[in-house]
Each structure stands twice: as C-alpha cells, then as structure tokens.
Length: 219
Image (cartoon, rainbow, N blue to C red; front, side):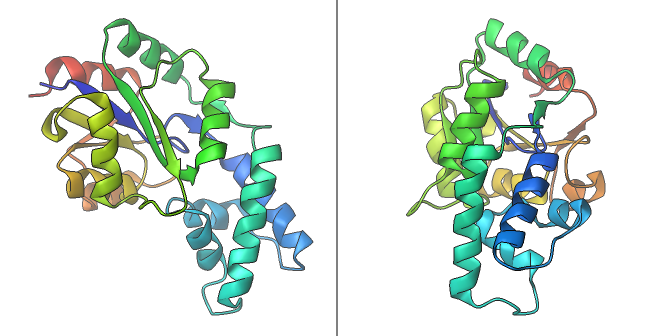
C-alpha cells in the first residue's frame, strides 16, 4: 500500500519553463553568449544547472571554468527573478490539498538549487505541509542517485516500496528505480511519455488527482 509521495518540482508540480528560459537567456546575454529557444532549454533541464549549461553548449564551446561561471550566474539570477511567470499546473493544488487532508506524508525532491526550490514552494505552494523540500546542494548527490532519494524517504517515515516518486522526466524514473520507489510519470511535463516508459515508469498519470487515486489503489 502507498504511504508516502515524493514529487519532482519543475514540470511536475510547477510550470516553470518560461521563467527558466527567460533567466537562462538573460545570463547568456550577460556573458556574451547566443540565446537559446524555449525548446532547447526545455530539452536541457533536469540534471542540475551545470549540466543544463553543458547541454546548451555540447560541442566544447565553453571551458569548464566558463560553464561554472554561467551556471553560477543562473543560480544567482534565478533566485532573484525566477518566479515571475511560474504557476502550479491545473489540478495540482487540489491534489496536494487532498493528500494533505488524508494525512499522506509528502516531500519535494528536485535538482533545482536548494534556495530556489524553497522559494518556489513558499511562493506557489505555501500551505502544503511537505515534510522536506530537498534541492541541489554542494556536496550532496542529486537525482538520479539513490542516496538523496532514500534520505527523503527517511524523512517521510515510509519504506521505498510504499512510496511514490512522481515526476516528468527520465531522471525521475531513474531515481525511482535506483531507490526502489514506485515510478509515476506525469504526462503534462517537460518530457514525452514514451521517454518515461523507456525509463521504467510503473504508471503514467494524465491528471493530478490520479496521483491521489494511486495512494488508495496501488498495491
């Protein structure tokens, strides 16, 4: 029986793509680099800010030092200006309220920098009683490493096999598989459903309230 739920943030609970795209292009411009389309940015997100920059410039156009400079600028500017156009996906707030009302422990696990993750949750989901909001921090592994997922499971007080990992990306599905969680892919996020299935999604949901349903029916 499902006793806890871990959520990815960007592309799962919050539609953050326009803000990410705007901040990335602002930083690229400040660093004298060419802008990227929203589709290019969408394809690059999911594995942390450093890899986002590496994916945007995959041909070795930037030195490692310059990649880190651009990534650092993105983290800094996003913290100040990255919650302008963001909004929860339709039905997410109702689903979270229902889970909270039923006493289902919930957490957020994201590769977004910790400070930005906490700010986004406090601005857009302020009343949701998440047990932990775990973002990317120096010295800590990020998804899809099992260590960080199991840390969050411990905070929930559940077992991996009775915990949903809900996300929109291959990274989330890989995280679930690595940590022994139930992999739930959402169809409304940044990645196609086919990719989620290829990476082991146990279930695909098309509406947020279906996540609540899984806590009642999944064995």
